[in-house]
Image (cartoon, rainbow, N blue to C red; front, side, top):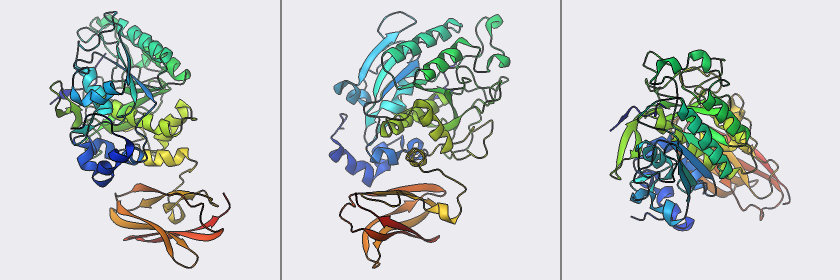
Length: 435
């Protein structure tokens, strides 16, 4: 398939959470190193700081090879914690995947790297299955069959998420090429297999492709699958990356579904150094890793509930298009959506959604900041006394999630959540009941 990258330009082991929290709460930019921007863009740091880093989740990576994953120090924690579950090469029919094309190693690095200060990926505590389904040297339809076999293997091994930074449109024998009409989500072997994997409960995440500025502009397959979360690419500022393949699918589905950073995305090269690469190949795993962290927080949810929450959290959800799809997801918002908050038009009353109300032992909420500004969120009793406070700096038009925990001790009665920011003061009345 088209491997969706267009160009490439120390405590390594996992620490207990208590030790780990200090660096990335005090200075996330330093902690994440080269990967900071691509994770911050998705508001993913919020999930990590709540200790959702993919632990217990299994991500199967279907790709063209994973050289040096067994030796590079950024993957040390993967081995020392026995989180590399299994490997298989469907092209060569053996279990050796630490050779062949390095594309899969670059892809994996956006999720599994754990080298604080150098690069930390989007799912640094997840477990991984590495599957070679792609023969990088050729391009024939049999690779779609390898892909389906890989997805079947992933299902049998208990994978929660598949990341596939692969796509199929044209082949070395042009008589075998797909036409745009094939990309209706129900025709190609890869799309049928991907949707079948989704029907088995796997969240299938696939790169949209890099044909945006070529004669064939459309997404590849299996990104056209109805139940496949197809990922387009944006640049470091969140603008559409000109190479990112566009939609819709032939049957009119919005594709890509969402976007993540795929232009100047941080990856670890074969020498073990952070470099920057371009391609929806990198946007896809950056997002797949965050999706695994989100699902870790809501294990009772289905793959499609996670899928829809990611779409709903995206910045163009009410106004999707063929370039961004629903846009850039916000994983703090997706977290709120899954916890029961339904975002409406953000009028004054929606700038500070809080729940549950009445509350017993905790209050969760979000402050929707209209500008980049300092804020203070306070829990106040009916005498006007501040019981707890959270301070910080909000990004423009980005929800600031917050939580007050351990409130069992409070008397029953009326309390207030109050936000003070440059843009104004916002207050919500809360009622405390017995736990």
